[in-house]
Length: 96
Length: 488
Image 1 (cartoon, each protein chain N blue to C red):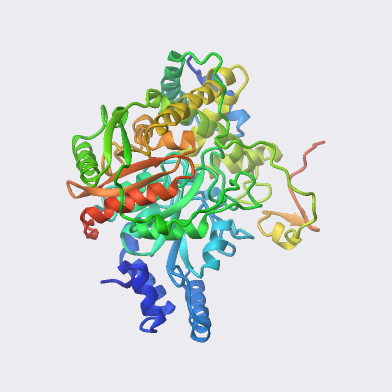
Image 2 (spheres, one colour):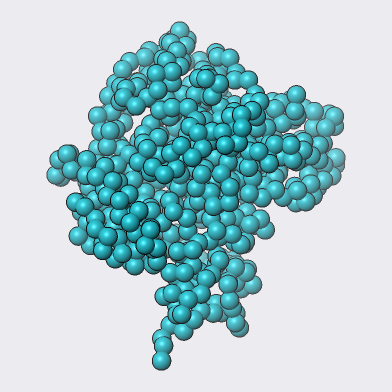
């Protein structure tokens, strides 16, 4: 499978990245080489093999739903690039 | 000899006798940083004021009350993807150049409880993606053994600072070899524990099914002490394993009689430098002379490990790094609207390798390619883990080289991702299978250190430390690096 420059543009958009023309060309070439390596996996018959997403034999770790101390607001907002009235401020989500 | 090169027991006893103070230790570290870090560039931040203040507090405290633990008063480096309250934590990225953690990672808290002193934050490949430290967006790190070579990555700053004697020990993180590979390149001891042994609360996530924190130290005994201090279940990390933490120190018996060692032919074949191979063979002969049995074995799916890793890790990273959008933290860059803000923040904040991996991961997870790439890689991951399971029915440890070559030159591979990725061929399998691995120095090749990698069963850190320690006791220690060569 080869990735085209148009696909690179599409994937970049999904990842919220704006690529320069030079990056688009470079990533198309490099991703193709990496995917060629990845295609090596198709040599293996993996029919019926369970995928491993996690190596520890654990799932759905539960705990009591108890109230614990949380960070104070000023700490939560310490790194906010812009804030107002105890809220994080961003450009308008809906325009017009 | 510098104070920071003395043994833990030596320092401990001199502190107890009041021959030296915590302030002396911190000043020794600061002096060394002043002398060499302009060349090495292991530090992204030196907390001179905070470390001295802490040292004075500890001297005050112990002038009144009795015995301190063995890690007390030691100056320590913390990789810059591990959150330290009040100390900027950048992950080596421009995107987080201003990030102030509001809590300590559990490992940092545990080291503080042991009265170790954080001296600063260590340079690293951006978001821990890299094998050379050249992907740091602030400065590459230079290998103290030869400043024209890389220290490895991504915990290159942590490893280089230990090798250069700037800190007593350091913490790193290992997703595909990022503790063991720089340990091998810098002649230090690097331990990647079993997935889940150490809490990752406060570690900035790269690939969550693979990441693990671990120590970089001058020797195996120090590694055991640090592991003892930081291992264990944490309610703040639901992926930390609820297992009993054994006494690692009592494992250091020097005895490897009857140890069954498997040596995978795939890690001793094509692509491995002949001198590296020869030093590993010599090390195996040493273990054999001490009563271990050595047999060649096979990990038949290990040739697929690099490809598997470079699908799974970027896929997880593309998801984990979605949070860096400039909304809640980080260096925000504005555009015309909110979507532009995400694009501007991320496109200008991330460096090339991080973008490449986000692109690769997003593609591998995207509709139409998920089964062919991501799911396929997860299935092959199962096969790789099963190879190890089968071997561990017959063998106690798997041994081979940590890296195919010694440290390479700066700028030599940075434009060629494929060659760079191939460097991780010996370390990646343990991450995919979640197994513990340690790299211990086994000699010099053309003046550069070579690492011996020992891989063990899940949660068998005690065995790894016992074997690595016995080997270390039976072999000559490396000399100290002279900080020579030119910074290319």
